[in-house]
Length: 221
Image (cartoon, rainbow, N blue to C red):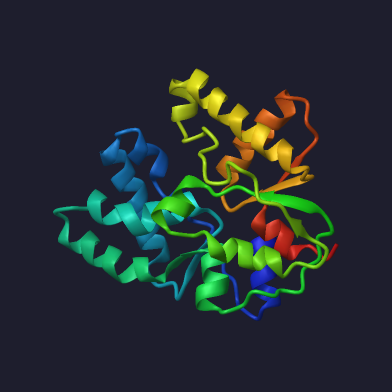
């Protein structure tokens, strides 16, 4: 909803297609490629005629733009759909800065925040500057970089279930780095990371809030 608010404020017409489901990443990452193809095919059919697809998740965006071609290898029809659709798929901050060419959205968020680079957004999409550029224009916001900004939070979908001790240790390292900044909020572009960090912060007894970038940009203070 925050993403829609921001896009409409900038003059874009936003359509939410009710028939949409998942991008297929959970099944794909778990090795269930047949099931993943079924879900991904539904995505292609649902959004095939959309002008632009803006996604509030780096991991979902990277699944679509980086792995659909692999998923449909050998299927000429679906490969053609992938080639036509993927150039129109953008992560939220990527769309704002690189496509729409906006960085100052008139937002106000008078808090000290630190930014977490989610793995897919950083490593597969190359998104590092865009979110920070947007945060840098928010009134009253103080951005304090954490030492472990680029380290994984330990979620990784089923990784956190299958390798819980390792996932927990990674989350604790991240929490220590967050706390050291003195920030009151942690911002990211992936809700899965924010869910992992929120749980780890709460278990450690910290009252630091986790916030999606879209929520910050939609805020008026």
